[in-house]
Structure formats: C-alpha cells, structure tokens
Amino acid sequence: MIKQIGVVTSTYGHYTLEYALSSIAAAGFCNAELWAASPHYCYADYTLPERQQRREEIAALLKQNGLSMPVLYPEQMNKYTLNIADAAPYTKTFSMDRILEYIADAKFWGAQSMLLGTGWHHLDDPGPEKYQRSVAAIRQAAEYAADQGITLLIEPAAPQTGTFAWDLGSLVRLLKDVDRENVKACLDLSAILDGADRVERWYKMLEGNVGHIHFADKGGRAPEDGGVLLMDELEQLDRLGYHGTASVNITFRDCCLVPDRQIFLCGQWLKERGLIG
Image 1: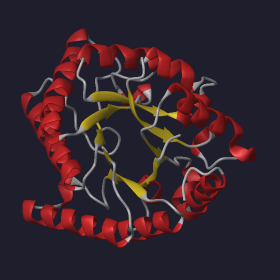
Image 2: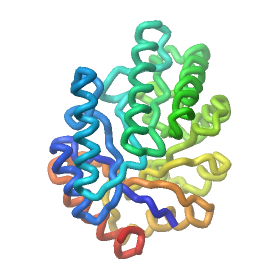
Image 3: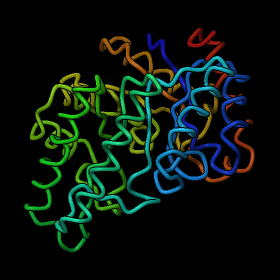
Image 4: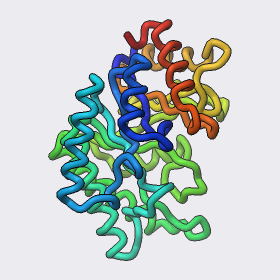
C-alpha cells in the first residue's frame, strides 16, 4: 500500500504557509507537497538573496512541523505564463530558466520528484511543431533533473489550458515520445473518478510508468459516503504494484475558506484505514 502520503498546499492558498504546514501536521500527515505559487513561494516574488532566504525559511518550517517534502509542485500554467514550448526564444528561455531553478529548489528541500507543465499552445493553432517543442523542452529539463536526482512528473490538465497532455491517450503519447527514464506520469484519481474511469486502465496503458498520485473523492472533495470508490482505486494501485508517493489534492471551490475541515476529514479517513499514523 502507498506509504508516503502528503497534502498539496494549494488548498491553503488564502492562508500563510506557516498556518498550512502546521494544519497539515496536526491532521496527522508527515509530508507536504508545496504548491509553489504566491503567496507561499514564487520565483517572481524575490531577488536571488531573498529567494535563498525563503528556501531556508521553508526548510525550517518543514522541520519545525515534522514534515518532509517528497514532491514539489510549482505552478506553471494557470497562474503564471511560463511556456517551455513557446516559439519566441525569450519566452522559451525565460520559462526554462525558471523550471531549472524549481528543480534546484526540489533538490534543496530533499524532494524526489517535481511536477512539470508541458508548455501550451493556442487552442485554435495546435500545430505539430508546437508539440515537438514541448517534447524537446521536457527532455532538456529531464537531463538537468537527472543530474539532480529528480524525477519529473507530467499530470494531464484541462484541455482549455492548451496543454499537450489532457487525457490518457495524449499522456501516453507524450511520455513515449519524451522517452526519458526520469519522466513519469502523475495520476489524478479525482479526475479519473469524475470521468467514470478506473485507475487500472490508466496504469496498464502507461505500462506502470507512474511516479506520483494526486487523490481526492469525486469533485476534488474529502471522501464522502465512506469513500468506497476512492478506497477501491487506492487498493487497486496496491494490487498493480504501485508503492510510491501520493498526496491529498482537495480542489473543490469552497475549500479555500475552511481548508482545515477537508484536510482533517481526509486525515481521519486515512487513519481509519491504516494509511497514515
């Protein structure tokens, strides 16, 4: 069964990181997955000395709360206009430089993996050359990440973001074309359940090339009605041989005002099933 279970900090986007990490620890978790975005941590908020200071502050906060950070999740597509697949040399270089900095951040915090956006295209102009730029950029990031001991994770995103991985088929194709050992899939169980699909099909189509799991019940909520479907999916991952990292990823709109309620419900649900201590 999955042993390293944490919480994505984006649920606490309207609270300080100090509050978020304290709450996550109080709910019984040992891991936090930092969603690197303002106001918690963002490349645009600091000079280089200030960034190093913030890195050290976050490391101290993790230690203070008895938390580790196995996975880093830098925001790249929805809140900021980073695009590693852009045709403009300045935009592409600027975006890649930020990604390489985030990989260095991941190593600094002791993370094993980092979420990577694919870059994006305009929805009315998805030419093949844009896809090839994405593949080349992911390979470039993967080479640097390999030197740092970091695995990169690709998670399908909503098609309206212009992502090059928006469903199972496009994710399988992208990972095969990138063809790097340290580039793997991140699966979102909530999205899979919302699509009336099953994780077994995704895992088998990906031939087990899965490096991380985001999970919540349908609609991005804490488990409801006993979380039977969600538990079935977690148990199926165990039967399929997945024993890697996973993070609770609560995304439904109303959680932003009272995130503790959802995170504590998840913590209690997981404790009752022996998945966290």
